[in-house]
Structure formats: structure tokens, C-alpha cells
Image (cartoon, rainbow, N blue to C red; front, side):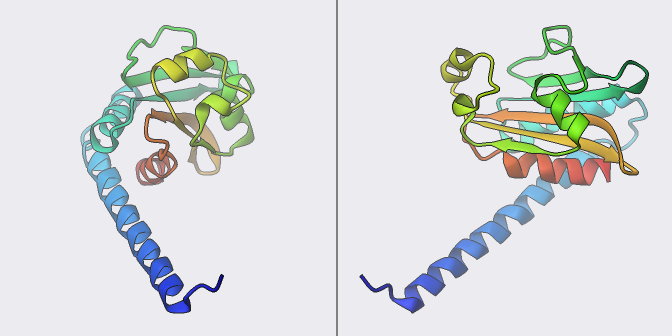
Length: 173
């Protein structure tokens, strides 16, 4: 079967335009979150506003932010918004290299998934299925080439990879 090159090229152009529009909207949302940080001096306040902004602007189910405590080589959960707001649960303190967020910090590499229930590292698939969680995006937060924390989002639409990246870039650059 032969494809009409004009149609194929037009389709790619339309997809490219859609992607460009989506990126611009995401950057605008991320900028709105960054503007909400004006006057914040405490790291916990900044973290809370970031996670709340992600929930409000991007419609994630929940967002979490951990800050690195270098003297203990662990991440401390300082903000959790959306479905879970408890800061003292199972993931309140995560050693570097443990769980997915600890590996993100240790390796300085983002991790994205649009099919969370099929990921081998997910410890509670039933939870993900029951809450219809499809997407996960975790990003190391870097300052001067140094990891200072991890930002993670969970969503039901499986398109979270662009969310955290745009927010992390605007907020922590």
C-alpha cells in the first residue's frame, strides 16, 4: 500500500504543531508555578507550592518532592500534594539508591513511564490499578551540577513526562 506523501507530510506537520503548542502551554503553566514562588524563602514552602502547582495546573493525581540530606545520604519528603499529603509515610525518608526516587537521585537521570502497572519496580500494582495510575515522571533536581532533590508526579492519563520536566527546568534552573 502506498502512502500519499502530501498527507503523510501534512500529518507530521500537524503533529509537530500540536507538540509545539503543547510545549508552549506546559511552559506557561510551569512559569505560573514559578511565579507563585515569589517571596518564598523556606525550601519546604517552595516545595509545597511546586507540588500544589503541579496538581492545579497539570491535573496530576499527586506530586511529591524530596530534598537531599547529604550528611545522611537520603532524601527527605518535604512536600506531597493531591491524593496523598502525608509526609510521614513509607516514603518519608528514602536512602540514595533505594526505590525509584532514590535511584533517580543517585544516578542523576530522569525516569518516565506511561504504563506504570507494567513496570517491574512497582511494589503495589493493585494500588496503581485501583487508582488508575498510568503515568510516572521522576526528575532529579539539580543546582550547579549537584543533586538537591527529586520531583515525582503520578497521573491517570499516562502523559506526565512533559509535566515534571518543564516544571523542574523552570523552578530549579
